[in-house]
Image 1 (cartoon, rainbow, N blue to C red):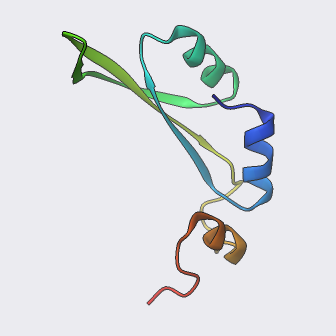
Image 2 (image 1 turned 135 degrees about the vertical axis):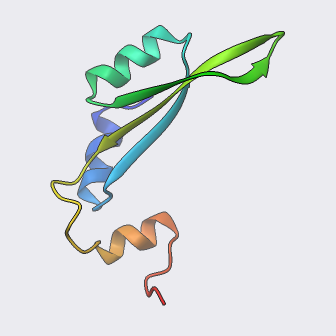
Length: 86
C-alpha cells in the first residue's frame, strides 16, 4: 500500500500524517505498513462482511518532525482544505 514512492512526496509537500485502513487478515499488507514505520490500532469486530465479523487496523505514520509548527499553505491546498481558516 505505501512505499517511499508515496511517503516521500507527501512529506516533501508538507503533509503531517499518513493514515491507512486495512483488513487485519492481510498479513502481507500489515508487514509492509510495519516496515514503513506505521503504528497500528486493531479494531476487532467492526465490520460484518462475507458472513463473518472482521478485524480491521487503522495505521498512521507521522511525516513531520513537529506538530507545533504552522502548516505549509501548499499542503492545505493539496488536501483540498481552505487556505484561510476563519
